Image (cartoon, rainbow, N blue to C red; front, side, top):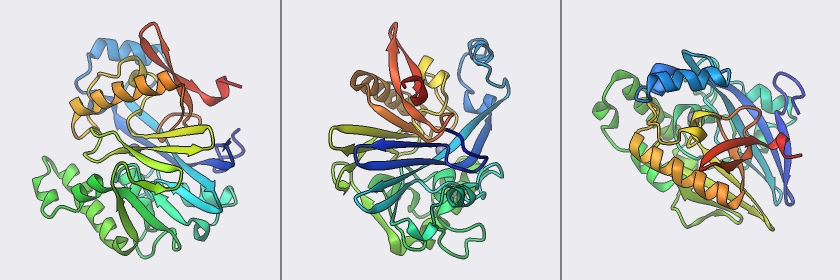
Length: 291
Ligand SMILES: [Zn+2]
């Protein structure tokens, strides 16, 4: 249900936990960068067939709020409008959904890219956006972005800027950030499932409530068409494109086999749905198809 421009995109129930999806706006990249190494003709034909723009790959930026056992958990923090101007709607979206920033107890990150981390401080970087919240990130991911000299080792100025600003954001919230290793529980009912490639320590989040499971897939699935029809295409936004493709195929196979409910940060319509396996390939099935 889409209530208003900035209102909740979708609400759902996971056992006794309430799921609210709100929007941080959108993120976009040139198709020639996003799919630089995909076969050009097939890429163009697939995008045209599904009504996707030929030159720009624009993605929804969904953020999930989970009310669980009296705690309010934010899954990723949006970009704070500091990465791309089309992002940064999270504060208004939360307000429209009746969710006060002070009511967030915990922010759990899938990875530490700008559109997921930079919204953890306000637009001026003067104050934390969620003043009462602790933060949790995958141990490997945190170690990667905290390396000294990382920006200097990046291959271009864009990547160096991201490394510098990400480190600065992590320094601002250092006293509230806690690494969690795969296999350790984040909190009761939430655990990381390593899914590297997009970033070195990217991790999906498996949420279990009673006999219901929801898997947050982060940025493994960033296109409702090609990520499912052509999971092997290398992505320009992945740090290790070969590993990213292997992770995508493995996760799709596992999610389709389990018929697991998923939340994908960048898929349209709120990003809730599941993965179907049809004729040996995969398809995105939005949640509202299933009712
Ligand atoms: Zn992202």
